[in-house]
Amino acid sequence: MPFNSLQFPLFFIIVFFLYLALKHKWQNRLLLVASCVFYAAWDWRFLGLVFISITTDYLCSLKIHASDSEKIKKRFLILSILINLSILGFFKYFNFFSANFAHLINLFGFTVHPYVFKIILPIGISFYTFKTMSYTIDVYTGKTEPTSSYLDYALFVIFFPLLLAGPIMRAGDLLAQITSKRKLTLDKFYEGSYLIFWGLFQKVFVADNLARIADQVFNAPAPYNGAAVLLATYAFAFQIYCDFAGYSNMAMGIGKCLGFEITLNFNLPYFATNPQEFWQRWHISLSSWLRDYLYTPISFTLRRWGTWGIGCALMATFLLCGLWHGAGWTFILWGAYWGALIIIYSLLKPLLAKIPGPKNAFGQKLWLVVRVVFFFQLVCLGWLMFRAESMGQAFLMIKSILVCNMHMPGSIPGIAIKSLLLGLCFYILIEAYQYHKSDVMVIYKSHYLIKAVIYYIVFYLIILYGVLGAQEFIYIRF
Amino acid sequence: MEVRDKLNGIFHEVFKDDSIQIKPEMTANDVEGWDSFSHVTLIVAIETRFNIKFSLRETMSFKNVGDMMKCIERKITP
Image 1 (cartoon, rainbow over the protein chains, first blue to last red):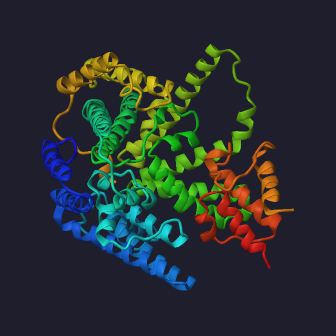
Image 2: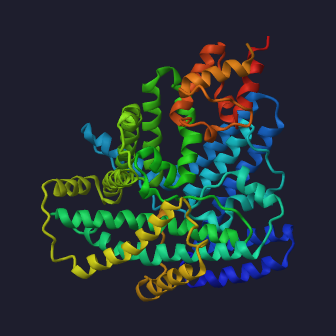
Image 3: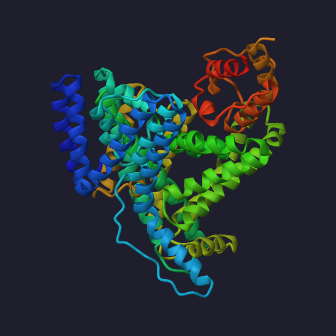
């Protein structure tokens, strides 16, 4: 039951009206039951797995909080992390590591067949596992007080708008909103509805249309044509962004309608001018999670190594960030690429700061556009590695761009390119306006005439050109 | 010298800005250049100047400069 399916509005309307009729405590119980139904609609068998994580972290955090002994605290923290990572490791990475291990042994002349299980990846596992782990770690460090209510904690983990693909909200933020009374206002409802509408547009119009172009090139066998690869990479860059940002906006909107404040997950990432800024704007809840629970401990442990320590911590964090996205070498390559970009940037930062920029306003704007466009090319090179079906395909595709074979093949019809440009122009214009005003909600806050025109265009594009077949969200697979 | 003054001096050196006036409620968002890279430099500088050693748990529990100051005071008090 994805947000863009026909069943979801029906499900949400029923939940919403029941929610309005109930008091705070029963609203929480209703949301818990609704979240279980929502997850069971995907696959009821994995609901038990979510509750193993919930129960583990609920009990471990209470034990950590109750104990005065550092040894016992640490023991329960390790137990919680071990259980969570074992579940994640088995369902997501077992086959990958098993196949690669067998391959490694075979390199030494032995013949070993990998143990491979028929494993279905439980949906949202990477998201809820990270959420539960951060809770226990925060209780251990004293950042969060554990809740004594099992049902409230269960709702924190399984809350349906955020269950499948985040944002990975922390207990200090989301659990606090669950345990205290929420205010439902008409303003919040309108704001939420706008976010759902805009997110739906990002998904069914921009992302799903661009997917057709990207899939056509990435799913084809070699040889590759440089122009087609470039076009497909740009298409994928906006596909993955609008797919995930669309999901996040819908999650934010649904949360707002229910009186929750959901954290912003994407803040116009393609306007970034350097890798550090990109990760402050892209998938913010994941990058801050990785910073707090992975980069900080590693860099702290290696702090006496100076620049080398920071470099190692950055590379390890981004390699694991790549692996988090999927069990495949292309994801690891993508992580290594971002690790390298960030390390190079952190080394060059003092030098870059000395480069004098233009003095006049027009020159400054032009310089910003040049930097944004240049950095976007580096982001797209990363997306090529990310989307490629294999390492071999990634290298062949990069090679096809480098040899400058820019003759557009007949297999990609002109109409596809035209629709890509037209659809993207409108979308990029809106984002440029949001960036200019430093406010992603600027359209919602505009004069009603501007709003009416934009809503009309968005509605028209969704109805006429939207892919209305409940296409799966990419990040749900991670 | 009080912990606060000494810590303020470390902030001036690490972030190369003599106008910084640290306050207990201050966070990384309030200081330009206080990012995850410079945070490591800051921690090492504090450990060296105060001749103390933080544990990982302590550094992960800092919510603001106030938490940091309290932790330093606890460590230097005999």
